[in-house]
Length: 329
Ligand code: UD1
Image (cartoon, rainbow, N blue to C red; front, side, top):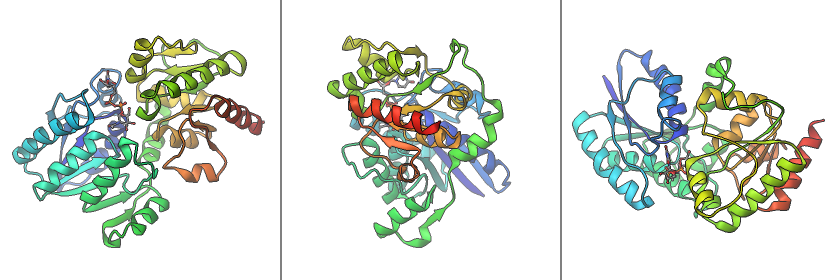
């Protein structure tokens, strides 16, 4: 019997785990237990995903969120270690690049439990991003590296990983979109009309007041002059805008569940985002994307011309939006 302990904690991981857990259920020789670190805890950021994706309640529910990165990761390490000892899995499964991913992989590796990493091999080559540190270390700690793209495989090969540990398995977020897109749901808070969809939460943007102000100015300008901007607002961004009295004038709604997010992607004209996963989802729905970052882990989308990197610069964001909207006609 293969006993897997899956560690999740943040919104995108619920989506990925939902797909993989369903596939694991088909194997009678596999038993999966789920640990939720509590990194994301609001109903709109967590439980709605479990409900919509038909996931069982976590077997182990921790309540670790907030604080500095070291503090959050350290607390997770202590409690995940205890859970691993208690559950005695022979494999720990982690997803993506959050603090929950790193803590799960590190706790397992220290106990000599094998680690499988889904979304291995992604690189932005920007070490100031917490996610880049998390994914590099997680790959190092992993025995099974499940890569979504050929580029991810090449990144690992360049770093000298043994070919036998690397598998090109495709993108589980595409599996999720294909499985769930028929259940896409119009958000109750959507007031009608055509819109550009925007999301913003990356530490590199929200923790620099200059960048945050510049992006908000660009979104306000686009909203008033190009096309209405609809923005489900992440709690991190919401707090920082309030604390710093920054006036976001677009149509703001609360964070949405997975089905509502699929509907918004399917019905928007274009996506503006600093999320990793949503850049790909926009592509799956055939929507152009302006990425408000200086680099992306999904450079294939840039090469295809469907995604443009605008950073946090006002003029670049506005001109990328105009450019991509024009080239659609
Ligand atoms: C985390 C991941 C990021 C991922 C994102 C998905 C890390 C380092 N970052 O960023 O890679 O793209 O999740 O959303 O792991 N908050 C709430 N309620 C919640 C969740 C968060 O109020 O349900 C608040 C937290 O208290 C904190 C802020 O939002 O003040 C940021 O949350 P945090 O988990 O640190 O990181 P994310 O920005 O969500």
